[in-house]
Amino acid sequence: MEFRVLGPVEVRRDGHRVAFSGAKLHTVLAALLLAREEVVSDERLCRLLWGWAPPATVSAQLYTYISRLRKILGAEVMIDRRPPGYAMSIGNATVDLNEFEKLALAGREALIKEDFERAGELLRDALARWNGQPFANATEYLADAEAPRLTEARAVTLEHRIAADLALGRHEQITGELTGLVAEFPLRERIRCQLMTALCRSGRQADAIHLYHHGRAVLADELGVNPGEELQATYRALLDGTLDRWPGSAPAARAGARPRAAGPSAGTPAMLPPDTVDFTGRGPELELVCRALTPDGQGAGRPRRVLVTGMAGLGKTALAVHAAHRCQRHFPDGQLYADLRGPDGTPQHPARVLRRLLRALGPTDDVPVTDDQDQLVRLYRERTRGRQLLIVLDNASGAAQLGPLLPNTPEPAVLVTGRTALPTVAGAHTVALAPLEPRDSLDLLAAAAGPARVAGAPRAATAIVEHCAGLPLALRIVGTRIAARPHCTPDRLARRLADPVTRLRELHSGDMDVHTSLLPSWRALEPEVRAVFPALAALGPEPFPAAEAATALDLPEAEAERLLEALADAALLEVSGADEWGQPCYLFHPLVRLFALSLEEGRAAVPGERASRAEHNRRLTHRP
Image 1 (tube, rainbow, N blue to C red):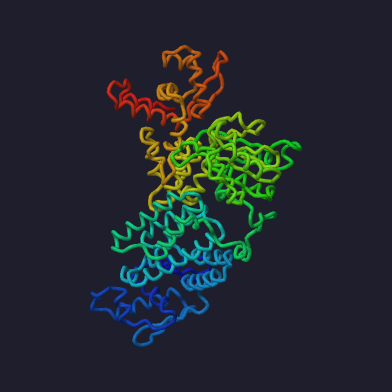
Image 2: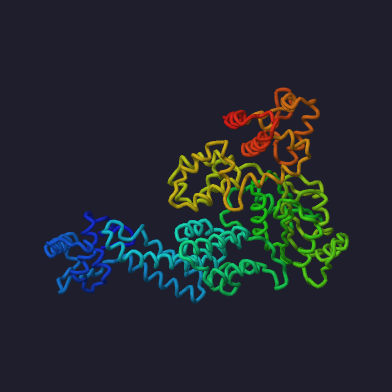
C-alpha cells in the first residue's frame, strides 16, 4: 500500500487509487500519517478539521471518521485509540513524504562530497515524489499548518538540485526552469543567485544584472530589506567576471563528467562561449561545418575557412559555437572567440579585437597598448603561426574588419559568421542558413518552453511555430516567455502573436528582441536603400520580380534591381525562384516584412508622409 500527501492526499493499493471522498476524512488520514506512528490528540485533530469553531458533536464525528478509515484501509493498517487521541501504524506501506526526505538527505550528502552527478540523480528522484500542492484535498486548516513546512523543504531541495546541475555545467539547460522558479519564489535569494549564475555562464550578463536589480527592488518593496550577503556576493562576482566559473575538473571528474580527449594545457586559450545544451535541428549544416574544420576536411596545406551566413536571428552564432565545441579535440592549442559587433550593434574596430585575442594567446606584457593596427596584426600572426587553433569570429561586418583577423598560415582553422557573403574569406566553405522547418521549429519551441508545456497545447504550439516563420530567435523568445509564466497557457501568447500589427512587439524577452536584431542590418544600408525598404515590403508577402518593384518605386528596372540586390546582400531579402520570363523574384521573410512595415509606420507619424496608419494595417493583414 502507498500513501501520498505531497499533492492530494491519496491511498493506492496495487497501483490503483483507493476511492474515498471528503476533505475531513483526507485530513484525518494526513494528520495520522504526519505523526509517524505517534499519538495525535483529539484536540489537534479537532483544530485541523474545524479550526477554532468545532461542532458540539466533536467526539462522535472523530469516531465516525476513524471507523471509516479503518474500513477503507483494511487489516494492513492499524489505527489504535491511545488517549488522548489516536495513533496509526502502516506496516510495510510507504509514504511519499518519507521517501522524499530520505532521497533529499542522501542528495545533500552527495552534494557535500562533490559527487554532483549522483547528487543530481537523488535530488531529482526526491522531487519526482511531488504531485502538486500538499494536502490539496484536505481542509484549509491542515494546509495552513503543515503545507508551508513541506513547501520550504521542496524549495531547498530544488536549490540543491540546481546547484548540482550548475556544478556540472548544465546552465543553459536549466535557465528556463530557473526563470519560472524566480517568478514562483520572488523572495528566495538563492534561486535568484542561481539564475544570475546560469544567465552569466550563457553569455547573458545584461539579463543577470537586470535580475539582480529587480530582486533588490522586490526585497525593498515587499520586506523593506536590502539583498543578503549571498545575493550581493553573486552580484560582485558578476561584475568582477568570476561568476562564469564553476567547480574545476577534479570535482567534475569525481561526479562522472567525461574528460576531453585532448584537453588544453594551463596556458591554452579557451575563449568559446558555453555550448547550447538544447541545440536543435541544423543536422546537415552542422555536419558540413564540422567536416570542413577537421584536419582531413581540406587538402594538405590549404587553410581551413568556414563561413556561416544568414539573416539575423537564424542561429548562426549558436551553430558556430556548437560546432566549435564539437570539434575541440582537433585543436589542442586552444580556441579563440571574438564577437566583432559591439553592444550597440556597431562593428568593433579590428585593433580592439586584436588586443583581446593577443592577451588570450599570452604573454600579456608583450601586447602593445597602441592603435597601430599593422603592429598588432604582425604580432597576432606570429603567435598563431603553426598552432592548431580554432578561431571563431562572430558577426563579421565586412572585409575591412575581417582581413586583419585572419592568420596567414594554414594550421589555425577559422570559423566566421556574418549576414552576407564575405569575399575576404577566400576559398571558404560557405554554409547558408535558411529558416527552420516546422518539425525542427516545434522541437526548438519545446526545448525552450519545456516539452510538457508544448505537448499540453498542440494547437497553440502549431500556431506559434507558424507566426515565428522558422526564425530560431523568435521561437526561443516565445519559449522563454512560456517557461517564465508557469500559470499562463501558450494559447494566450499564440493569440497575441496572431495579430501582425503587434507581433514584433510580442517577440521580445530580456535582451532577446527580433526588432532589435534586425536593426544593425537596416542601419548598415545605404540611405537610398533604406528609403525604399518599407515601400518594397508593401508589395505583399508573395515573391515579386524587379519589374514589379520598379513600378512601385517609379524607377527604371535596372535601378530597382540594384536596390533589391543590395537588400539581398544585407540578408533582408532573399532570391526566390524566377518568374515566367526567367527573371529572378525576391521574397521577404514574414518577420522582416513586418519589421520593414513598422519602419514605415514610424515615418507615417511625420507630417507629409503618404502612408496612413489604416493603410499600414491593411498591408500587414494582407497575408495568406
